[in-house]
Structures are given as structure tokens and as C-alpha cells.
Image (tube, rainbow, N blue to C red; front, side):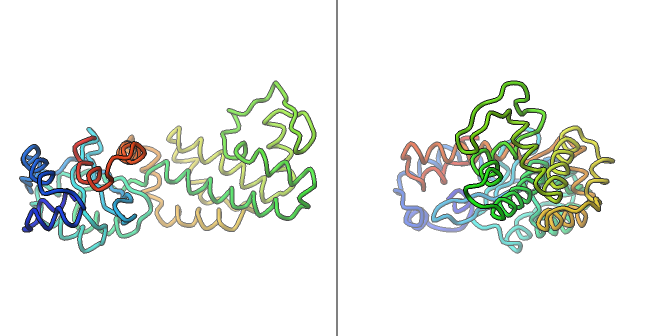
Length: 294
């Protein structure tokens, strides 16, 4: 692992732990040694925190520069004490330079920011927020679907075209109907979704809230977002809990909508890692080299 090269350990132990040769360790260290001379006098103004699954499906911590998407650090664990120790090494001036930290709703990441970065705003990743709300709606869709007989039209309207319910309504086909043998009718995508959500007031309210929430986040409409988070309509239980989570983190959630920073840059890391694994490159070597392919 990359972080192992920053520790006082032998190359033999690093090679053995990562199931790679000593020559590989030496080659990577020789080519990239300049990356391991840590300067604790500087940190980028905008950071992005996340984790990813590495060797043996263990979760590793990754920190990126939110502006140029370069890796700041990869740590072998994401434990709170590990992160506090790492960022605590930086000078007060370096930590004061950090203006935003983007993350998902991992609560101890927020503790790290408050403890280490006195001038930083916490930004909840907008894609993570949308994902949470979409999942809560989909859970309700399944719940409502199961109240109907499997042979019924209503059940089939929820079952086979389920992905339509998760798309933006504006993107649904509204002109050209298609025949579906599951519910034995010729309907447009918009008609399918409309008929489906009309079977339950709770489902309809939840769907409308989800659609409005996505639009508010994407347009940076924080006023509308605040109204939606405080919504009093009858909605699904899981969606209600999700909104409560947003309410408890309101400032950071609104920052996610109004500021241009997100964790989208971290998707490139996981995509390249998974692509290498699909190509049957040794996963340990991929993990070892992951910092240098971004």
C-alpha cells in the first residue's frame, strides 16, 4: 500500500503484506519517491473526503484536492484517530488555509473538520444527498408494490418499469407510447409513472418531493430546499428520516447545493481502479499504484 512507504518499515514487509515483489516496491519508490516527502506546511483550499474498498474489501480513506482532483493522501484505514493524527501533523497555517471539505454524511468526518480546519465550511456532496432521497423513495415503491397481487396491473406497473420512477419526470417519454406485455397496455413512460404513484397518496407525495428536491439541488435553490426539508406532507417513513438527517445537517446540506464542490472527482478514482481489476491486473499492485493514475 502507498501509505506503507511513508512508515518506518522494511521493503520486505511491505512486499509481503501486499503480495507483490520487493522489486515492485523498489521500482515504485524509485519512480515516485518525491511524492512521499510530505510537506506539512500546505493543504489545498478545497478538500474532498471519501473512502473506497481496497484489498480484502477493507475500507481505505482518500483525500483529494477539490480543485485539481489530485490525490492529497490515501490512508490504510478511515478511523477517526488515524485521520486526526494525520491532519494534526500539518501546521496551523496549512490547516487554516482549508476553506471547504466535501463529504458524505459520515458524522466523524465532520468532527475531523471541526477539530482540524478552523476556517472550513462542511459541504455535503449533492450526489450523495440525491442518492439518499432516491433510495428512500425506491424503498417505499417496493413497499407499496407488495400490497398488490403479483398478477395485478398495479403490481406490474411498479415491477418491470421500476427504473422509470427514479428518473427525472421531465426526461420521461410523454408522446410515444409503448406496449408492455407485463401490464398488457400501451402507455408512455410518463403515463406509467403517473398511474403508479396515483395508487398511494404517500407514494405520490414522496415522488413529488423527490423530484422537487433534485431540481432544487441542481439549480442551487437553497430557499426551496429548506422548505422541502421541513415538508409536513405525508411521506414514507424512510424519506422522513432522511429529511430529518438533512435538517440536522442543514448548513452543510445547503452548502452542497450552493457551492460548486462535490465528491464527483472521486468517482474517477474508483472507476480507474475497477477497470484495472476487470482487466485482471493484480489488485494489490493497482492499490499500490492508485495515487499515480489520477
